[in-house]
Length: 562
Image 1 (cartoon, rainbow, N blue to C red):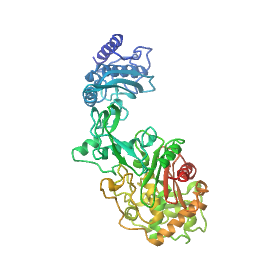
Image 2: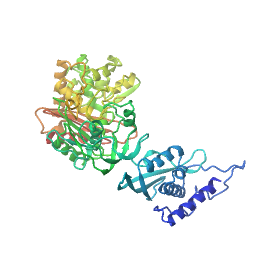
Image 3: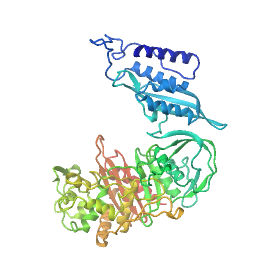
Image 4: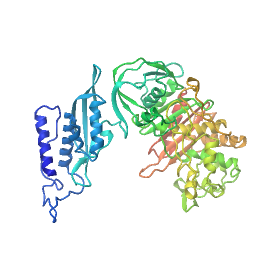
């Protein structure tokens, strides 16, 4: 009966196309394949219908995609949902597509399938209270085999409706919940996504936080309303530091509102320079800030869709995190800048065998030489002298990391340094294990190393809304801070960061890093440095060694100034 019903639906799809339903379907017939159900018996020995197994055939992918898109284009949410593996969720979302997003005249044009994926283009008309505009975008669906029935179905996920939708989000057209804003840099220059693409999520976040306070009037928009923002409206809000939070996103403006002005700490000059540099690289993210104040001057990503890695990323920072670990060893007297310090090829702790890049060793080395060469074993060798929570306390109490209390003016992830034991604790000392950071965090902790005092990074002055910036319970010990600063300067002039930082002196310091990631052929490349009263950090995912990948990026933005 299922197969007969399917044939009927396919026939209906062909009729709909012939009748001018505004949807071009795939060719729904073709040569049989080994999985198209044309070979052998379709019943089991017990007389039950035979359940297909394995991935859907090319013919099944085409026909299932066509049936789903045809029903959606006709506005038949129930029929379209029946072609998915989650009919309830799909029906609700597709019904909301017309009811809440007010999208009509929907036309869906499938592209060429690739494996189980079917790309398609969408064109529609968005309307609200007499105002309407055309709306077009690209999306994609995936056809899978249903585990219970064996039939091919569309794997349901919100991104089928629109690629920017996540679980719990909704698509709506109405008078926008927040008035628009005009964001300006520290000198009054307007910041737009057309000129600064990386600021897209930042501007959305600024509007969500300050739209009601900046004095503007709302317009009519088609927008994505995030699940997190709805929770906030109901009193279960998220903090600025929630790494999961994404702001609502405007997809189409039907009628413009009146924007209010929001002043930021961004420097248009530094932002333009950062944008230009990340555009030359793949999967690159960078932040520039002022160590003396914590003001964020630039934040840019080469990938401007989805998560803002520069501010919200959560990645292992590799050896850049040795800045924090070194400060702890110096304060505890477990290291001294020119004291002998072991750097063997290997060091074992907690059942794990750690090694240095290319298995190098430094015979009769000092902590200066070990730090400058980014020796892993020099840090692992000290793990047996530490308590499980020592590193977490150092990160929180001196560097302000991992407490979830930053109030930056936009959503940020404030780093994570969990209490761990055995091999994972040792790995944390070199920025692996459970340690997670982003360029904002890394730029912050090298700024703290330079000045000795944590100053919470921010993009909007606390004077704008009387919020309180996060602080650290204590400063870095003066002797440890002097040694750490000298170590970083030495690394930037004579160590692993020297090549990238050449010509930027005299007031410079830097640290390289790379972080292994499961499933990647190359590690993520990290680099952080200061030059005068500018500090920067960058990551290039799958970039390889930090000195050669992320190093030139950081050097370029520091050279460009603010």
